[in-house]
Amino acid sequence: MRVAVFRPDDERLDEAVTLLESLGVDPVADPMLAVKPTGNTPRSADFVVLTSKTGVELTHEADWSPDGATVCAIGDSTAAALRERGYDADVVPDEFSSNGLVSTLADRVEGESVEVARSDHGSEVLTDGLADAGADVHETVLYELVRPEGAGRSAELAAEGELDAALFTSSLTVEHFLAAAEERGIRDEAVAGLEATVVGVIGDPTRETAREHGLRVDVVPDVASFDRLARDAVDRLREKAEL
Image 1 (cartoon, helix red, strand yellow):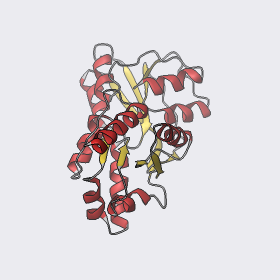
Image 2 (tube, helix red, strand yellow):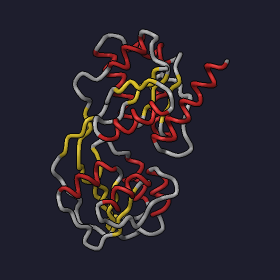
Image 3 (tube, rainbow, N blue to C red):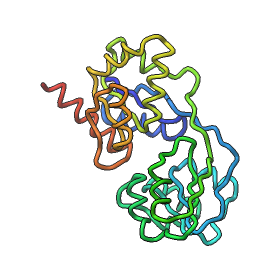
């Protein structure tokens, strides 16, 4: 069974491939995201929010110091990246999402400055939600997320009916998959091909993006992690095979 994975071409892709192989499927590694650093670092603020492992890595490489700020991570993986590099992760929401972080901080940030440091594709749910809670919010773009040249092998396989599952880990991976298919002149065929696959996504925002683009979603894990997404999708594949 062929399962497409769209993680950036670094240790995250290596780990994803290893996991999928351990689950007994054939990974199709097709990175749909590449990181282009801007050279910016988080500004000083009462609260500093980091939303990804990549953002943590870039701030650490720039010798950033929180200077007494309350450091907030959007989820466990970001928190772990902070701690591995000697930072505190003072706030981690129970729900690993923009909504979850807004809910956690809503009663703490009125009149406080909040710095949100993330990619150029961050959700307005976070910044607008914190502003609505009375915070003075500033956003710094640490890196841009671009589609790697040559991405799209998975779209070709989907169009040919040779793909069994696709694991989308962000709204942007959905959009880049479809853009790669469009470039090849096979968008309609790729979308039709996904109808016969197991489509897995991380979180409600990615599910909504997939649906807006006409993709049926089969799997949304309770926990927003690639490990859970992969395991749930492979379980669904096996269920289909038994029908």
